[in-house]
Length: 159
Ligand SMILES: [Zn+2]
Image (tube, rainbow, N blue to C red):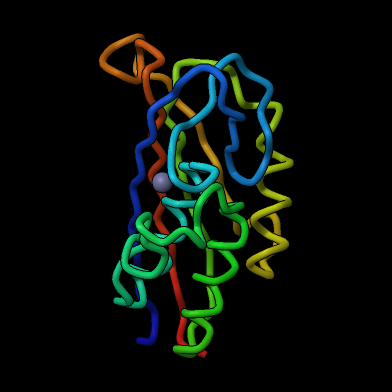
């Protein structure tokens, strides 16, 4: 059977004075994610899941944070580049399931926009891009609004 599963997880600190990019969408919020790139935790988790499914390493291998090229880069570009890597290895995506873990703000209203952005870049139907969200019931660093976490799993199929 020519299908492969992948899993990705990513963490970023939340700090004041940074734009908050999630799933390729700018979320109005007092805090934003800190990172070398635009720190889009969901897109990074999806990149890692995709690369992992194809056994191509991880996002840090392909787009190192020591490389000035990727300073403040739009993570949609990293998603596209990761997608190109798996396509080059003759894979296509079947579906993505993901969960965002953050205390605030509520992101339910932004999920359709995130799905649309991701589906467009990865040539998928909207219903192949699942984005869920949860809080940690105020526990831990997520609960204290110090950070945000994203988990993603992906299924690839050999073309
Ligand atoms: Zn990241």
